[in-house]
Length: 209
Image (cartoon, rainbow, N blue to C red):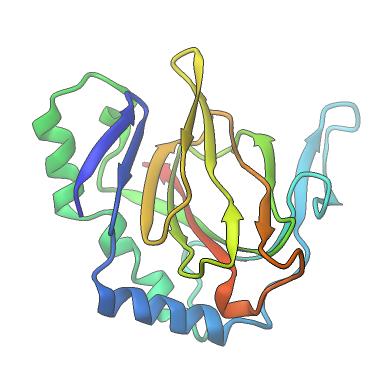
């Protein structure tokens, strides 16, 4: 549960959740097995001046996902929603204050709203280089199985590519405008693995008010 800087704009925390909380999150994921679907995203078309919906599956994202908008309380997501109390924890804000760094995190305060993006990755999963529209992203990785390799997080920051190896119960927080990606994921057998052995990413896309 120790926070540290991977760069001035990226904070990581290993063993982020206590075991009992992590088990509750895994229970939520399992109960939402039917909520995951091929991702469809919207993007603003400057030529038409309209938002257009497109399928991102196997184009930009090789995973399945679902979304929870701020204020929604969908069934079987109680513990995923309760992650707000862990992401916006007093320990995290105390860490920022004690570090005394003059960086982008000075804009992160306790008056926060968010969308939640939950993604599952199987064999051949990946996330291509992209930047997001929100101001900060808290990202929790759940990857207990040793059947999958890859899925490391890449960031373009400080004039270089920073690689953070995928590991279970890792939390990463960063400004969403930093370009980032997830390296391809491979299984030992070259085939898909059962749902419980997949790599999961729970992202809070944060707006600061």
